[in-house]
Length: 609
Image (cartoon, rainbow, N blue to C red; front, side, top):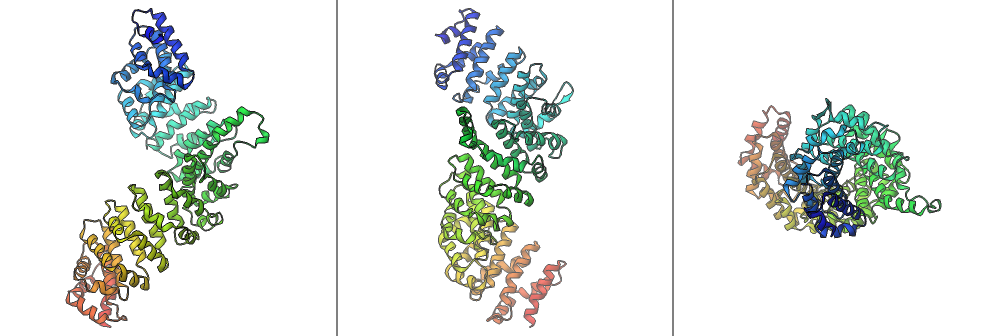
């Protein structure tokens, strides 16, 4: 009935306005109310109402639209179904402070992701909203600021534009800095800090700009303190984590501002001990925010510890930190689990910590559990962490192997997800480094020859390089080389031929020649090269290649084949001389490259001995 009256052109404007007000009040009720209104197509009716000449009616329609769009049950896309709506809303921005407040609020709630940002940007959002930042109405200023914070988020195009926009002779970054000051309301400080953070991350403002170092960063650290509301502390920590994520200087600066590392430990103390809570509402509120606080703290610790060894040490020495991370890995909330794994990954970059704290807390156990059946985004970070735990100096390597890691990693190498394939093969490469023969055989068995070939023909160069790295680590130390080549020689030689013939970059070819040099170092494995004329011709070809790295790698193969003290060296030397290898060595001994020259001379001495 109300909607019917609202849409009747014949109804008086006062009546239609009253209908819009009542509908707006209904929309403020439960989510079910909003769902019912959406089912009755309230949005097209209200948008139609915006074409009326009567300002009071337009404002009532906008207020109702605002209430509906801020409800979590309303799909944002409903704003973008008709292209003329956005232009019309932009035009209505100049009508009154109410149209400005409601329209900005609608935009900031309905701008989710790059597609929406682009639509609003192309309709002149920046130019139309910028002057509202100096409006006399606080509500208008605040909603305009929120608009910019969602428009600029992870959007270089918007961020680069904002830097050069000025209002009343003042550039936007300067206006944002003024809004950051301590005497401004917290919501304004936080939102302008988010705008400056997005602009900084997009490269529109330098990381060493005073507005970041002296204003934005300290403001966000302030938001993490105990006297702020829980919601503010969550938003402050998450924004700060994003600001400093990729910049080591900002990480160092944040870590020594206001004892931030210790301050964050407090994020884990909610809900506070039950005896102290007499207020049931407060308990409910604390519980609701407890996992958000933990997630934010883990994220910020991960950013703080991303690069600097001393900061990692400080984080780990914070009260019960490792226990907190281990608990975080098994939380029910997927967001907390992801943040805890990120934090662990960041700290696992430290050799010192891998040897101490990670060992004392047997971190690998919960990590292996996380890897059993997690969604991809967690798997990617968890498998990266596992790569670090499998480095040769990490004491966790043994127990991880015993807990069935080889199977798990071999299955990751078959993933559709590129990052998981890279991590799976990378972890196997780390595992094979200086490993005993049994482990190497287990890896080869677990991978299967077909899978090895699959990885060697992967379209991603990273997968290819890590697979070659794995082969190189498998084929190290003589008894291992001979053993592996006796069981998998034919396939490995095929793989090497395939790569040396393919269109690959210098690094890939160099790594492949290094594998051949390792094979040439075997006792019985050498014969697989010596009886393969195709491979010998390829080695000879790379000795005269234009790239010195490839020449050097080919020379390593030759040296290992002709080394004097070894059985059969005479026949090998003769065969290579007949192929013209000695002539090339003479030429290389005159090379201007000292490495090549030395290597050639050493090889020629083998012929003279």
